[in-house]
Picture 1: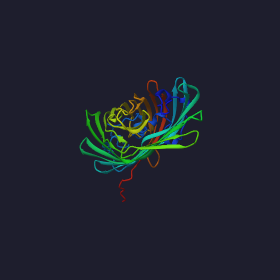
Picture 2: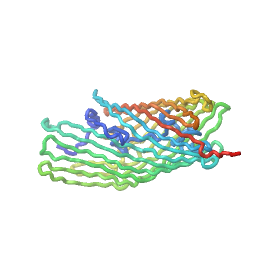
Picture 3: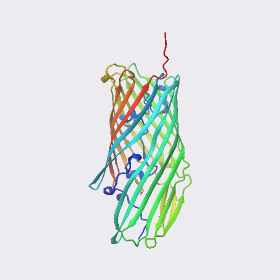
Picture 4: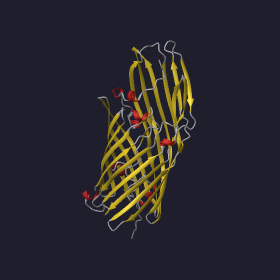
Length: 434
């Protein structure tokens, strides 16, 4: 009888035992137990309507965090503040069993303004990863139909980031920018096992890690006119990969069911977490400043870094870095926006219609198999706020569907509503008094 038996990928998807966790984590997904957790959308309200598109977009009245070079396009005299939240319903299914879970989450708060001619800055807070799950798996022990075991999986936390960035158009049409962020957060996970037969020892594992480090992203954009009505913009991004100086720990507790005596073994991996090097490229075609259509491609080189894993081989325990846990993550996004006339006095002419679709691969493996791929789509609207004091602000509303699945594993269908509001105020306007 092997008390250190790994749970198979099929066992992980016993969704009938999945129970919702507190909404503070922003996710209920059992897949958030892998790696650094579920990767958050690194975008603001207008991007989300296009399913996260934006590497080539240069918006004068929105903060485009995806490419810091875009900050150079922000209007002079204005201060932009954009904040958003989301609510979601997720359906988990496997082998005919289904269960729903719902939660809500703060998504982002960003701001931007121009400081000099051709120079814009931005700052804000954007979640980086989310961890949140709580479920149990029960089954008979191998060869013993009278004794059952129960493994309870629990996780919470995540990594947050606060950033400041700048973009500079140093040559007409050519801009460069950078975001420097401070990352922080705690990730807590546990696997607690128990048996119906009280004479069998129980085994519990607790994983903890604290992250406190930096993140650097660099962007480049080049825009040019094709003719009087058409323009093209190209965007490139680079994210620096590096160690996070986090020391993840694993505490293993074996408890004698007869005596209640617990034997505790602790492991620590120095500098066990790492960010991957990432690359991005995007195009945006602008027709008559009404229709904007684009495509993004991103690559995160997770496959080249290591992750700490607890293993038992020949009754010898270890918690050490392994290079077969991660895999490179690819994401492709297509989308666009239509606005009939953003300068019109008509409300309906100024409404922005957005849509986008994406495909992304997983950045981790589960028992040597590729994790779930993602297919997602969104539609959204930028609704102008018009009153006696302000006609430059927007309410950004979007709906998104995300389908995550892998062969023989849990299938997730998430329906998410994103709501954000962009305040665009003329803070720096000089008033002339006669």
